[in-house]
Amino acid sequence: MSPTSAEDARFAHQQLLPGVGPAGQQLIRDARIHVVGAGAVAGPALLYLTQAGVGTIYVDDGGNVNDQGAGSWLFTPDQVGQPRLFAAIEVLRAASSFVRVRAYATDTEPTATVVCAEREPVARKAAERARLGGLPHVVALASGDGGEVVVVPPGAPCYGCASRPGARLPPRSGAAAAIGTLAAVELLLVVLRLLPGKAIGRRIDVADGWPSVRLTARTPGCDCHNVY
Amino acid sequence: MSAKNAVTMSSLRGKTVLVIGAGSLGGPAALTLASAGVGRIVLVDPGAVETSDLAGHPLLVEADLAQPRGATAARRLTRLFPGIDVEVPAGGFDAGSATGFVASADLVVEASSHFPTMFLANDSSAAAGKTLAHGSLLNFTVQLLTVVPGATGCLRCLFEGPPPPGPEAGALGPLAGFAGNLLGAEAVRLLEGLPGAYAGRLLVHEARSVRSRSVPVRRRPGCSACGAILADRAPLAGGAS
Image 1 (cartoon, chains in turn blue, red):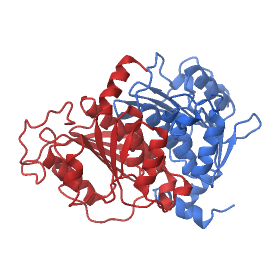
Image 2 (cartoon, helix red, strand yellow):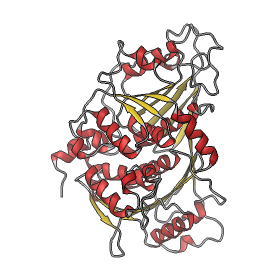
Image 3 (cartoon, chains in turn yellow, purple):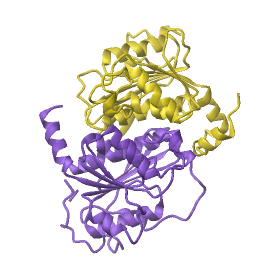
Image 4 (cartoon, helix red, strand yellow):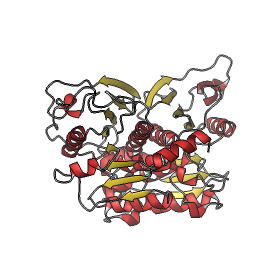
């Protein structure tokens, strides 16, 4: 299905970007993105992916809104105690009528995954599931004044190879949102095929307001190259 | 919340930040300020919500189309963070109002994406001795700079004046959001008395390559905005007066 004139008007500035244009916008429109989490990292990612014109968003979260819910930019204090899943879907549908927002279920078929789980073991498990499914995925974890965003196209070193071991700090105010927002940027670059090359992963670290990047490398002994 | 965070939030509660522009940069910057516990934001934006705003603005939804952008963003901000005081003046940030707006704030956040406004904010902040955190976006490139009057160079030390009009640039919503987040976090850093991450050095960040460059911004003798300021007028660390 081709975009309507209303969609063209909405995404006109996005289509002016080098390498995007109507064809790029169609790639975004065709994307079906599975977002793991609905907390302080995931909330901004969900909002920005929705507003960028992603065709389908699958929200995957089992938590309830707590008293820090506003940090996700999605939930107001009067929603404390409600399931985040349904509250998030309501906000996203209000943000854009061009997106189909659904709860993630086992029979859904996403084209890419964004992992914004608040706990690292959950993030690792979700990243591994995406890798085994052959899906490009972006993993975002906030820590202290910044955090890390890891991009794993199919065939690239897995998240386990790319992530930095060690304890993480509770994110400072705004850090989680910055990392979630950066994850949305990276996911859109994956969808738009604007990353440097196929099967090349990268990790972006944000520390004290400065982003830096390095290409990821497979850890010796990791068998993540054997899957494909 | 840790005891240290509680103390920090308490000190931020008494601060006022002037945010110029409630668009794709100013919106997330204001959210970051609010979530950090800043007590009062003066959000200056006389425009209305346009359809292009809805492609990347965390405080706006489709039902807000054609509504006043500043007031609409402020309404959502106060729903999320009921403890914050958000003032939305009726007019814009112009030559007649700039001095008054800047004088009333502890810190100026320039997020207008409009060159004349950007330089007006630079000049009025320098004249008032107020620290200015500036952010902008051009296609895939983010630029962030903090100007501490008397200690660092300013926007006019770097660019002298607005560039000639060029073709309309593109914008990726989440990249503007990332820039706005970093801008808001920089403002919080400055309000807490910490050195600004972009004080005297322009961050130029290209999203596709994730190449981040640091461009030193030194004071330029004879600068029309900050040339007359004495060198010891404001400290680099904790520049927010």
